Length: 275
Ligand code: KIV
Image 1 (spheres, rainbow, N blue to C red):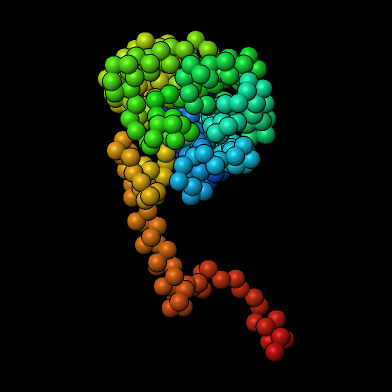
Image 2 (image 1 turned 90 degrees about the vertical axis):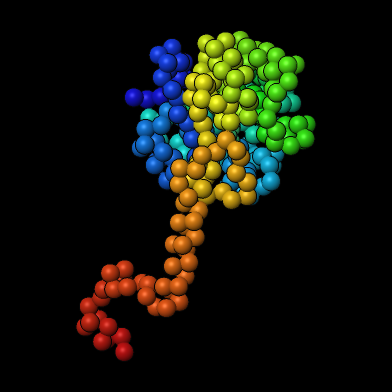
């Protein structure tokens, strides 16, 4: 069954948990789609896990379109969510609508995601009016890392917790079809999940959210710069890749690879004529 913004909302009504992972390229998207996931986020985490930046702030619209197109080519049934990069929507409603449109038209995403609460509601409303479904993202919003003073858990005291609840209600009212809750205490995320009629997708927000998302390099143990507490490593592919890369280097140096089965044949008569 095809996943859409509508089926995401229906999943909440049916109390079915939603599953999401990030992806940034065709082959990974194809594998994840084949596994039967509900949604793939082409996250601006691209900047960190693929492009090697220390945060997500340098990611451009061109980066996002390029990678979203690749992911879109790899999926059949998965909802493709494209992240709106830093400063592609903050400055004006015009920017927000035009750039959301580019992610759909040029990137072939199905929906877009943007970070922020009450302060971005006018942008969410305008994008939704342009018939582009919006996934909101509150809590730890990495594009605000400089304002937060680091990657920190959000909503821990009473005022901050109340503000997060307000933000969640506001993005729902503005028309978002789902909301990511990042690095939010589990009990607060549970309250928000109960108060909203749209699904909450948690990352570091406990088990009561309507769905979960992880960065795929984190859950496969492929990104060693930093592993957040909320990550469960389902595999350690980083270690397996290291072993494979070293074996390849050794075999090439020792003349073991390529073997006969990896080589192409030519008629001996042709070869004789070459001497
Ligand atoms: O960019 C990203 O990967 C994200 C997830 C962490 C939700 O926004």
